[in-house]
Length: 394
Image 1 (cartoon, rainbow, N blue to C red):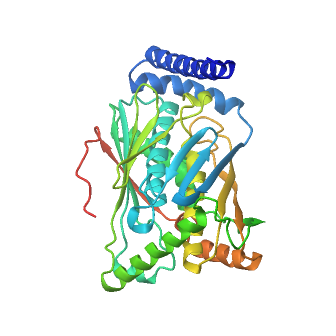
Image 2: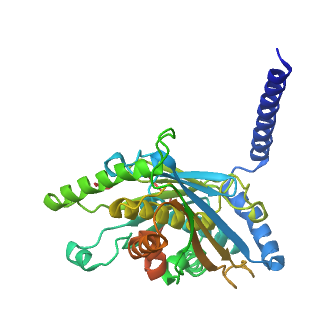
């Protein structure tokens, strides 16, 4: 075997060994963790109390979304983690991940479930199970026609709590959750997101024939899908359907596993280590920033396809800040600040054409307008464990 192949084999072996060692360490950490949710909340309550007394810096949140070449799939990167967001085949996608609407209800379900765990820990309530079912129901058709922008509406959650606490204590718990959750308050309060900054890189009007198909080729296929969808809608208007996500707090770790969408996609969130998590997935506050990015990216694709604006690369950067959680319980709740986005585009189009594209995106992007407008969220609490129910008809 040559020295080059030997070194390559050694690197692969070292990487595999390091990966297995990391998994073994994580598994050992989980094995040492008590298995009950009560134990987890007790430990987490101590850490949250310590952080609330000492933490003063604002956390920077960042997400980056890339429209992936010929497939057009939206690849979301948050720190070292990645999610895929995609459309179904009937809309030019490959159904490789949850769409932005399904992801948004998943983020809300997970955010509320996490806040129930945080507030139960802060109030020292014994809790044995936390799950949240989040739904968005379509408007009445007459009301829907009056809407200027389509986005998830009629937002509702049901929290399933298994606990020996009194009804009064659980009512106080829910009030604290709704007062404190930064994601829930971002949605219900609305946020004035500024116009996005566009950074352009020119590309040739005629693409090199030797290059493989890219984003401009995907947009041609996307345009065809849009035209076919519009033709179907003219004779057979699509029936609105409910969005649904269910998030469960895992008892040994506090990680939230959430199922969403007709594809039953799984989304995982974790807390940072200083708040009793393991750092194995993005925080739900980061993912809220991320889903804004995936939605903006998709609508840029849709508008470019519709207007026949050629794009060779498209990447959306979203950032924001989260103020610290100070004081026990909800003394000073964390809140979002300075949310903004930047779009990096490679195109032969003019700056004026791309500015028109941006204006069309901001006028129609569902999550951008949902956050900008704000919408009430209705909640309720049910004693007992969540039992899986039949999915709503679509």
